[in-house]
Figure 1 (cartoon, rainbow, N blue to C red):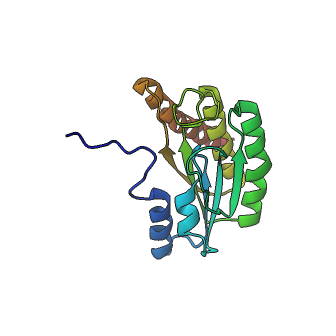
Figure 2: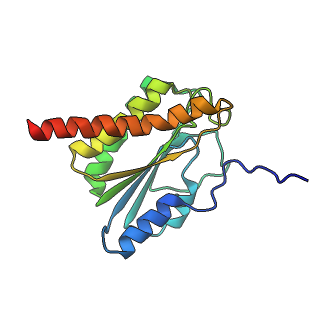
Figure 3: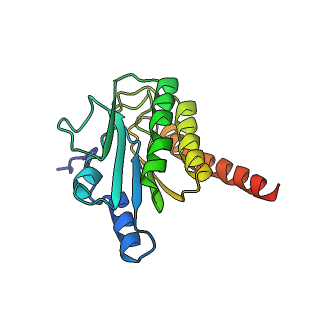
Length: 188
């Protein structure tokens, strides 16, 4: 009998583990988690609910899993079907002010690609271009304000495996572009 395939369940919360290890090693004190997976960052919300050293920010589809949401430090529920421009404007309305307010030693960013219009579990409607612009926006905003950022890929439940791999690669492409821009600016 085959084992069931579990979707949307993480055995280990990579962002929580990374934050705790870095804090324990004394490398950072305060962390901002920016969770842009289509599903609410309920795990980090629960883990850090009573911990002011880790600020949890989740921008997610309001009618998606989990049905009962946890309380992040900042939750931005989005309507189903939201497309690129509205999504990017919503992110721009929150992230810069959040960085200025929290002033973290490190930003941990979950770049979920399940916000894509072709994702079978997503319910948002971002395009490949929208995902790339989102990643550029997060990376550039953090870089311009002088905040170090570490990124993880997340989400993604497309039937087309090659398209899914491409969507995950967009984060790496954006990071390369931001790094190249920063080197150009430093050398100018």
